[in-house]
Length: 548
Ligand SMILES: Nc1ncnc2c1ncn2[C@@H]1O[C@H](COP(=O)(O)OP(=O)(O)O)[C@@H](O)[C@H]1O
Ligand SMILES: [Mg+2]
Image 1 (cartoon, rainbow, N blue to C red):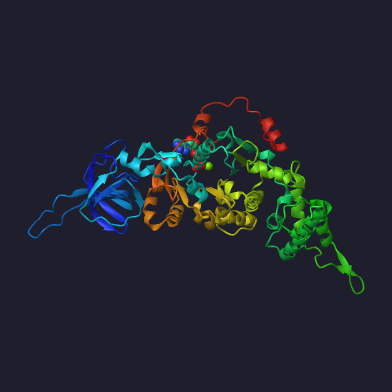
Image 2: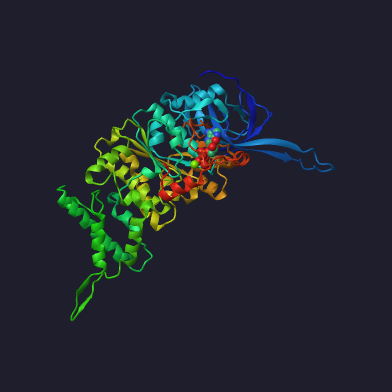
């Protein structure tokens, strides 16, 4: 191992569990080497012990003012002395051969010397994954040093990117994905882009399904998704509606099986991705809703008479709503033969693209849950039935995920929650990795977040969310979370198996950047906007077309 300058910065004054408190004996306000400020939260320290070096990371630094108590016969108290103490988490050991290992087998003792970790040593520590040659960030404490990740562990075991609005989450996603498609020409990535931000960041190699071109035909919906869309479970007749819907849906699908000679027979279920005639299915439900049956003397109302009144009003209003055209009036995917086409486009198969972005900014909010559910489910089912799934890993990105996979039970998101939770729990087995992005981790499905193995924790100001994230990470690292409120934009703590050790990093700014939601008020209010065509805006609005 290359010897670097051994610079002593203090000594251990307390050890408890995997924490050590270090009194710093050097000036903390000037750098010792490069950008190494002793005691800077996120920076590394080492404590030589026998032939090993115990490596720690600074979680917190403070100044302690100590006034010696007066001794008997002494009138004036001694002079107050200030001590700078840093709380460090002991995270691993570096052998004399430069091998870094997680966890500490031996603990330091009070009085032991503490040294800075030099740039060369850092390089050695972080070189563990250097052969993977995959990096989208530099170490915050040494910007010339890249943080490398273990690619399979990173994508294969799910990633959570958490942080307050404006802390740089979308830029982080863009940076990760840009690096990925640059390096891996046969990647398969599907991005659920809630606000239409990502198109600008990926001018090439990406299939963009624009807001007004999104098409997810109703016949791909499974029973639960139809239910989320049309049944209000608070209604008195909800149970009967559900039963009626199930029967009608199954019959409609079976009918297509017969007429198109798909020959599936008993294999057709209420959830099968088979085209059917929606009008006919609704006609059947309308029939049940007005059915009269023979009574003892005169005809009487059938068992489901009137049960579907509200159901039908809700359904009809959606079918007639132009915002739901993407679902109920499919033009491209309007038959069974179009399913392979839809899958190829969404999963970048034979499209010479590596990524598909679905811009959901034009989808009515009440349909977002169902759309997310359908998309997640088709990805899951695809690899579930794909005999070559181990050679076909897929990454799915869920932006602003708390909006549609909330932590609370909510009827209109139940299908989305089921689908994404299943991806998070079982995706690994089928070669599907997930990135969830959220500014409100506490409101995001706990099942999904607890399945994530890599956390990219960015600036987080809400105390509830901070506490929540603290609980998600191993106890020994909870102390690091104290840094969260003070991280700079684009700065993050990366924790998990895919990094050598918990690391404070500065994410590369993506190039080009996603369209940020940060609007420049000052700049724009300082000048007059010329030629704003209000008629044009109204026209686009009325036609619901952004391409006009
Ligand atoms: N890694 C970074 N380095 C420098 N600036 C950044 C970085 N990431 C984001 N920013 C800035 O912060 C702004 C907001 O970033 P964005 O990714 O949209 O945040 P979020 O998605 O968390 O709301 C961007 O316009 C960008 O200029
Ligand atoms: Mg964002």
